[in-house]
Image 1: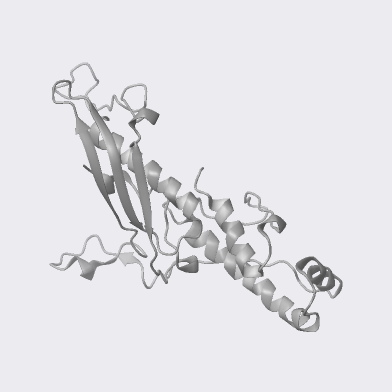
Image 2 (image 1 turned 180 degrees about the vertical axis):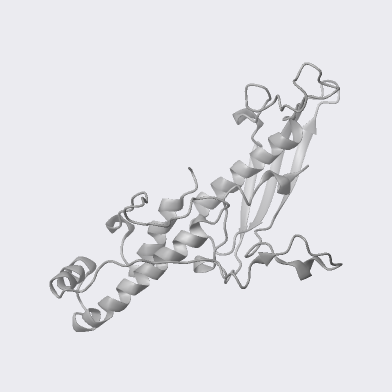
Length: 248
């Protein structure tokens, strides 16, 4: 899906075990291994699966700790071989969920202070963009010359993946704000069935292309702390870094 989910999970396991990423193999989940896995959605994948993977790795590390003390010079492969013949359990089931006591929002509550309704999200991923645009006053043609984006992504697990997500979200928001248009069946569009959305895909409206990407696109990551997610990171899927944040 382009989220970099597998890559980040491998990095989390690699850091926890203190081994090379080449020694880690990851596969897609299925109900034969994880009975109640949740879908990858709402930019929660790294938060949930990353913490669950870290939990499982830490369980295995605790079982290996006595052997590490007995064999301080053993490398990872040798240590695992020793653990196998010593009948140490080398599998673990990690689990994580967002604290229900922290997240909860009462949509029906009437109050002056919105904070009294509760927390709708575990935390917020914030960003700001400054864009230089050149417009031809005769033809109306426009070109984005340069864009600078600053995003607070906590402590990024993989900056390359996160920057790619931010760039994609920016261009998506640019298209939504300047060239995409929703055409509904109403009195102004009598040729469309009443109440039906006509522009439901790239065949009926323009979306950004490579030529619409800013000539100079600079993404800066703000290095902050976030105690509510794995390794102090923040969710970076385009569900969070979405087009609404980049309205022109």
